[in-house]
Amino acid sequence: PGELTRRKMAIVSNATLGWISMIDLGVAVHIQHSSIAIPKLILEAMEIFRNIDVNALLNEHWEYHPAKLLADVVESIIGAMFIDVHHDYEEVKKLVLPLIDKVLQASDICRIDCPIMELMAWAGSVSTPA
Image (cartoon, rainbow, N blue to C red; front, side, top):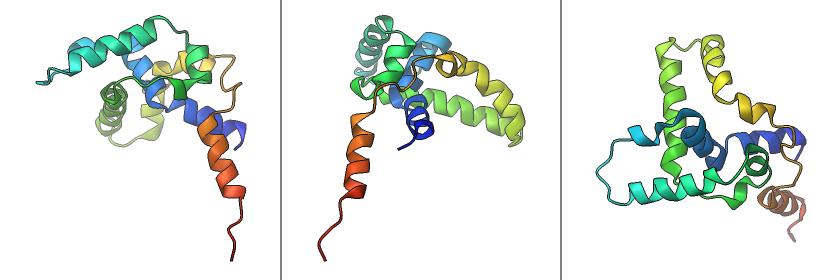
């Protein structure tokens, strides 16, 4: 896979979106739920994100497994923005780019090849016997 594909995968990974949710947006305290497991998952994610910078996260996003609900919150916010601006892509882009600015500005993004992508590339290159 090319560099653009690796960058996209790192930026939209659950780990990166979870980091944006917790560190940039601080939405974890606003999540309404009735699950006794969610507070523990949020605390675990906070421990992960408190001790990692954005470059390390982007380069090893497959190593981190925060609660998916944190990434879902970011995706929901972006979807709500899209609906709120009547599906105007340019308007939503103005709103979303500041959310992901730290991620986009990361200088070391995707220096390390993701093992999942390497496996997928290898699997795609192996021919099957007829």
